[in-house]
Image (cartoon, rainbow, N blue to C red; front, side, top):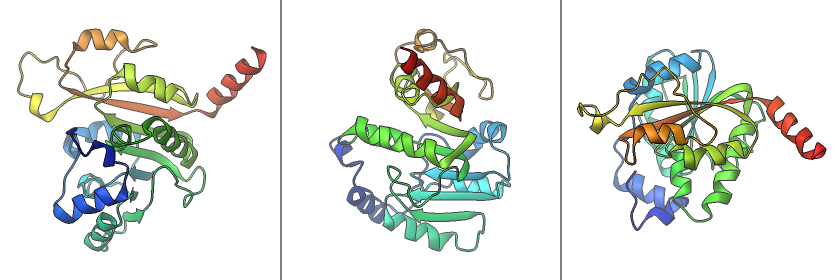
Length: 242
């Protein structure tokens, strides 16, 4: 994601409507499906109901459907891109497209999905106005629409020092972290190579990983957050006892 003068508009439908009108061609943030496929297959069975938030006009959902995933619901705040994607994929039953704000997914019942896939949506919210408030709303809604033991897969440029506190604030997630090289860094022989399907060791703050990676790692971080209602119950009990 390139940050610039328009970052404050990332939370506005008008920004995305204009962007998708001007540039209707498919675009995948960060990583394309072939790079992520082993990880998605590791955590998401093909028959699971998957929600892709901030889908845009990315091809990843189409690629997932071609690879056997049976039920993929895609949402985006932009009516322009949703209308285009509905038309494009009207003959693929596995793909559904709905215009919806990820901060208010009241159109979905609680516990509606087995998995939620986020490829850059939380990051875009963090670049906009009232970022902390909007990110909290989004994460609350993600937790609500997921079934217990469902997974939220967050693909982000955000290092553990910045993303772990935000995720842990909900007391809802058992978190594993995976690392994948950015596409542009794959040919760098000096870059540490990571096995995508193996979680990396992670201390409470994430500082051990950041020490290993260095100050400017050419990687994307993938947080696999498994919903565990018992964690919220334990947190509530601790607060009462305190």
